[in-house]
Amino acid sequence: MQVDIGNALAAEADPGISRDALARLDEDVARAHDRIATGRAGEEFGYAALNLPERTDAAEIEATVEPLSDAEAILTVGIGGSALGAATISEALGGLDTEGKAADAAPLYVLDNVDPAHVREILTEVPLDRTAVNVVSRSGTTAETLSNFLVVREAMEAAGVDWTERTVVTTGEAGPLRELADRHDMPALDVPTGVPGRFSALSAVGLVPAAIQGHDIEGLLAGGQRAAESLAPSLFDCPAYAYGAVSYGVAQRGADINAVVPYAERLEFFAEWFAQLWAESLGKDGLGQTPARALGATDQHSQLQLYRAGPRDKLVTMVRPRERADRTIPETDIEGLSYLGGSTLGDLLDAEFEATEASLAAADRPSVRVEIDRLDAECVGELLYAMEAACVLYGELANVSTFDQPAVEWGKRAARGLLGGGEFEEAAAVADKTELVVE
Ligand SMILES: O=P(O)(O)OC[C@H]1O[C@](O)(CO)[C@@H](O)[C@@H]1O
Image (cartoon, rainbow, N blue to C red; front, side):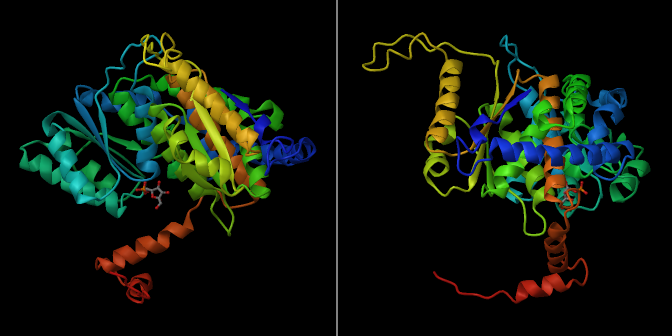
């Protein structure tokens, strides 16, 4: 993996960070690296996430899911970090390899919302008697996850399917899901202690579907370990820290938004995973950098207008695999289009990537290039780990509480109160809404 921060330097962009300021910031990076190393060594809450490539037991995961390896579909029931890591990994590894060979993996369906129409559509689509249900919740009490699981279980019972034979649970040491797994002697894996959900992709939380699909989860962990071993006391020696430090540096100078633009369809979930990681970790005390999700080349025909000519409040993070399965564009005699013929779609995508990067630079808009070799297990594991380490570094530099998420609890209590799940003052506040209705 490599990170090119050249187009975020003050000589190229506004907001941008000067080489001198970057050198000064590197002193803080060294201190932050030591703090991170200490936190990892002590398995401190949150920092422990950066030990997962060494902690996660791939063999245990593979053995646990082996009885479900015949599944023709996988249904992950979770939300936030309990769904996005799994979705990101399975999507990234589910395509053609660079030789064009299909992954031949059972499709993954993700229930991470309680839209009843969508839940009904999924339950109509999956073959319930040949589906592996992967229910994931650290707390085991998340309303959306447990509600969806109860609906899925009812649908399986109605179809005459023994759901206890088709379900693997990943949860914390205690709670309703753990009790359910124990009561029915179901396969269960642990959510790693000391690791917030959004940092748990390289654990059973993110790896169960990939293991059922037959993907190389040892390779994912090896890639994560490669990124772990790249952590160094200088941003100039560590791609992850270079990304985290420059993101922080330009945010300090006005880039309040970080638009993540993967130039690969199979990294679309990665942008969504990154959005939770960045927002839930760094959005504290009035600080943070808002993640925006886009997709290259598609969003060059939409959001690029804003990125290039809108407010000077954005960093654009351009992500791509350097190698991919490709497809030749046929020769054509269509007037004005003959230049495309004989080229490939990959050449066009790369040209658009580089043209968009240059377009932003020509308008003095900061961008950072993040490149991995290809969408294989090691490179995906390395990318996920590097972004987690970048996020932890940014949190140290910003001096925020990276690993908690107190602001999301208010809404949970209000919703629970509205549903009669207890007396919560937040629910009463809902009734106090100021209305000005226009029809
Ligand atoms: O794994 P759980 O406990 O169901 O939580 C799911 C998600 O909800 C959050 O706790 C936020 O409410 C996320 O941090 C987490 O990834």
